[in-house]
Length: 579
Image (cartoon, rainbow, N blue to C red; front, side, top):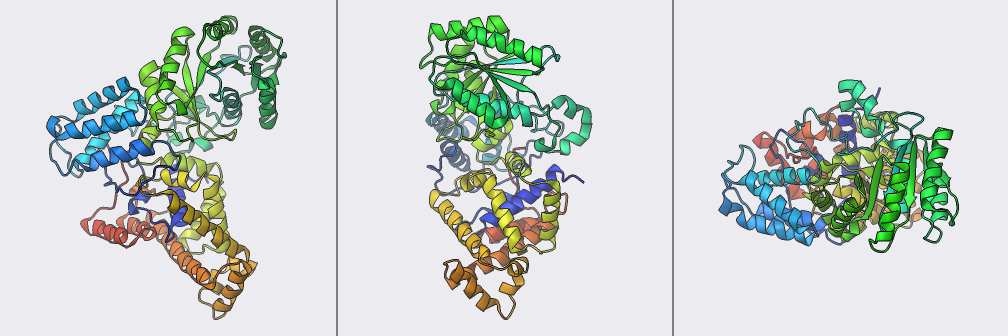
């Protein structure tokens, strides 16, 4: 039996909530309700506070500024041009500070204005929530999504643009990679080759599955499993060919080379002929870059295109360059014609201008984004998920996808059962911590949870990570019997002596051990209550008020009180409008 998307979403959020639920880290009680879009209504009242800049995560500055703007609108019943004038000015300033192209920023502001002016605030939401919904729709359209689509009939598992596939076994798909030096073009070639080989979803097969596919995570969908050949056509940069060969060897993809003395046009043509003869269905051609756009670079690209007639010409651009990435995309498209872009280094200290600007300036879609330094760190670009992150609403779908790649259906079902029955032990705690760490940095994971934007800073993250390491050290000092039976350290009459031995063995104080036992009990209770209330197939956006109150146990006292108030009023804390 497969664990469906909703059940795994519930499980992942419970696991992350419990892992982060320490005194050093008190997240908002609303973070368990994720991206639940109910038509056009925004259901969450987002909380703000605490600086999150300096974490090296994208969009922190933009998200923080937009949050402050929205909360300043107040409880208005109707939006007028005068009431949103100051808000729009602040939004425009935030967009420009985030290095969004001026023309794109003005287009977005005009779009939000047209959507907002004269609109009655919908029942059940506030003016600031509805204003953010309009910003979400405009961001979605600018980045290549469709804000008019019926969310009940579409899936955010399908990216805005896919990559061309081979028309027949004798006619391989040719993908030409271009860009300036330093953008990460050769690394992107290796990442793309691995993605096409192992993780690219076969959307033709998915479409044939019908409604069943809508319940599946991307990582559980059928894949194309392409046979890829990489061609080393960068004969100018020292060690470029060797770098591609090393990448190819590490991911099990063949690399075609003819040395540094050959003409790049001949290399590309020979690679295509080899692919046809030996059954490769995709050829990735890594071309040379330049420090600046020059005629020699463009002429070489044009000659390669004329020779091999590629199905795709992708421009690799550095997200760190901000709106300059959009201008570069437009320049390349005008000179040689491109089909899309790969945005690299999104995990760096980028302000988000490139992601928002590329399609608005060039008209070409972002097809892939680089999210880290490792070879698997390449993902399709989903405009809806990106828009949600920009507005601080998190990205739970991507979070769940990360978890799904690390945990099997059988493991997920076993974990759910243990949580419901409150049989969660210290061995499970270690597995849970390892799962969260595999999903990325603690700050990165927290940022994907709705309601967490602006709630964390570096010092809090360091405290959480230090606490988790200390807890893991204490667990490793336990016997197998103690790990499997936490009651020996909590209610048994030998608990204190056992705990003293464990803390001494791990180099910790007895007080730290006592504190950990208290945190462990609270965490186990919280996980059990949340799983029981959500049910085996429920997701946080359909959880009962009791479940959401249980989730608030991870927060502080004021947050628990707020959750109880919400319960008395007959509704729980919603989680935003993203998908």
